[in-house]
Image (tube, rainbow, N blue to C red; front, side, top):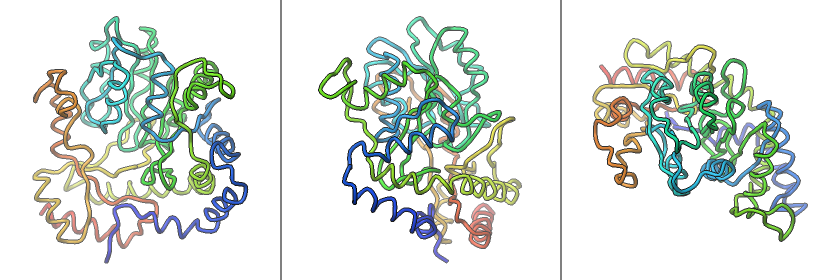
Length: 365
């Protein structure tokens, strides 16, 4: 049995006619930059999330950058975030000359712990950027309440959580600005790089639309400094082909995630879904002892695994200047040593999943 960590080929075969038709429509009209599919997918993304504005951008990393720029974040500012995330989260803060201020995680959800948030706020805090890690939203009810008290904007790094919800509201519609990624392996992925920013604020939406096209409000007129952050038309077309079946794929991910947890809860620490949350399982991540040995055993049994993320941001060489060494954020550090992700995609059948579960139990035994 050949087990895929993420099976994009199966998804393509399932949606081949629609995807091919959408791509060929772009090839026929030839509007490869900001073609009509970009506006169409923005409308559908806004409707799906329930926000007023969705702004398609070139990737999830630039979505964070554009959001920060729209809020005016710059040199001397601080942005509070989690150290347990992909480098892009802290990287975009630093790229603007601001300082990422890390707050340790809740060890149950792996997301930023709101109980530690207020102590990290200073007069220089310009924004809070929680990450909705692995496909489950951070605690935005608590985070937003603290942010509102201090007059601070909140940006959701929802690169892994598009399709998840909290108290009935979708990821992307839980904060001042929501950001997501459409990297191919994400819950909703295109066939290259892509992303989006979401907001209900008209002025922020206007700024983000301008920033993504070199700060342009009309042709060759640039009120602000921006960048080349446009969503490619062909990638928009791929997303349009995938959106009609996305709800079914989210449901499949939830079913597969629940099935994993039911079978593995006695042998490993499995994901815990917070009250009011749904989980889209961008990764299905467990905690194990002796991770390297377990991964090696699983590899020998034909089961691929991955680690998201082994080195927290404060221990990355790029952030060494912050002077936060080992022990600064112990819960993030502990998780980085123990987490392991198993194959997860909406086309994972029961027989393959059972084989994965059996292999995990054997490797842990």
